[in-house]
Image (cartoon, rainbow, N blue to C red; front, top):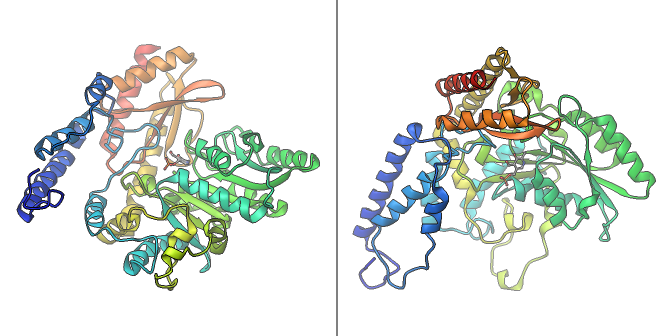
Length: 467
Ligand SMILES: Cc1ncc(COP(=O)(O)O)c(C=O)c1O
């Protein structure tokens, strides 16, 4: 791009022209989204290989870069589209896209509150709102992270620091067999021997078995180990099952363990009355992970961690003030988030959350999440009524696992492939009770009744053909 004088700063006219083209592309893309294929198109790996290249020495035009964005989008399943019902679907609210454009343009330093007090205040509004959602006390604190994995990591570091001595290798931590891998990874990164992450079996409803947990903790204590943390899942990725959070909280208190809840997927259902009922006990957790890029339909890169006693999060992450930052204003009434997390320079995530909250209001999120619960119940009832299918678990949240009745793993894989070949819906699989199981997960705010009815028809006719 040729510019007037300084090549890295385009002229206002150039910026306007590129900006309008980018915005036109974005709006056009969103308009086409409903009709875009839900599955990975064939040949995407070859297209990717064709894009192996070095950066050019001289600059070029902007228009081909928009074509590149279209190629990127076209060669991946649309994980934020209405037919994406695999893994945990994404969202990508337009209000957040605008927030990202504007926040990266003003480029302020949100992680030190004295450097950008208003930015830090806005981000703190988001954190406070999440704390209030779980009735956390005024001394609670939190941070916005890049996602649930980093939130789980900071939580485990805080738990380790609070409950174990510096020499912590005898510490043991407890998770259910359905826990997300990021929790085990967090323990490993926090320096714990992975063998000290005890996997407790699930009960028939795939929730953590509290009696089995009690036994493992007692055995570990008898062996001289130091149980220090218990992690409950508020919506497992596999089936959406919610662990018995109240009972886990009781046991954690009795055993002096830090109680962390991984609510990356399920946490924002707390906004709905059904969710609040099902998540009962979550408010007793020492810390909670949430993912606004799941339950609030935001673009990827937005997770959250809240900690009941905020100073414990700070104790685990703060190493004192560095001489090169001595000129900064002292901590005001808004925390410096860098003291509560592993990061210093980072993006202004708060604006990405605050814009949609201000533009749409909390009620719009509550309604969208309620709609997801309704759609899930509808899907569950419809699949359960089909004699060709086995639907063994009633959904706690918005995941419906099912199998071909009496089908072996190969038959179920064939069913998965047949469903995804439709291009209209994309679902994924897991292993439950040692058997290949298909799962539908409804999270995107773009998924509505018409697409779920289409999904039901696709699944039923594929199952009828295969049986
Ligand atoms: C229950 C749960 N915890 C943690 C994570 C990890 O979150 P992220 O992908 O945002 O790092 C996920 C991701 O799907 C999840 O479903």
